[in-house]
Amino acid sequence: MANNATSFKFDAKFITRTAILLAITIIVQFIKMPQLITGSIVNAMLIISAYFVGNWSGVSIGLLTPIIAFLVGLMNFPILIPFIMMGNALYVILFSAVKNNIIGMMIGAVVKYLWLAASVKYILTWFNVNVPQKIVAAFTLPQLITAILGGIIGILLIFILKNYFNKAKE
Image 1 (tube, one colour):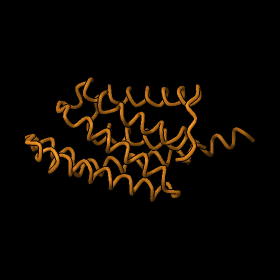
Image 2 (cartoon, helix red, strand yellow):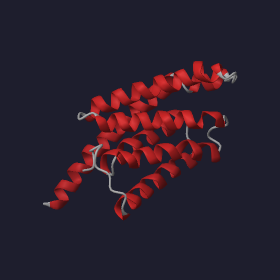
Image 3 (cartoon, one colour):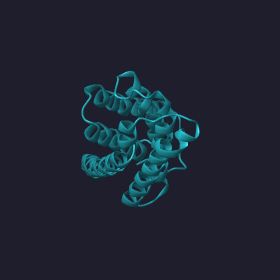
């Protein structure tokens, strides 16, 4: 499988698989479920795409999901888009960079959480952006929870799909 941060081949297989995983992620976002569910599934898709297609697939999807969330009305504070993009990229890159998927996911989840929490509590305020308390609340602890839950879901699905594909080859 593609869980190798150094291998990258921008070809039809990469584009097709990334597009399919992005489409699934968009469908999840369009359903407009609570943050805990949507965020967890989106994070699972980032992990799954990074593992099976490569970290650039996961990063690509992670860069597009906050834009899509804004366009479908899940987020009404667009100044956060670049911060979410960076958080998603950090999550995917750290997951891919660490050989142990569980440890990589946990490190990625904590770094994503710290980045997003610092963004809404400190970085934006340095630029005189008044971040509403509701948004601060949504971009702190819930981000850690959804990154960890999504990572657990993603790693479980990776395990199931790897076993399925291995049995199908026999």
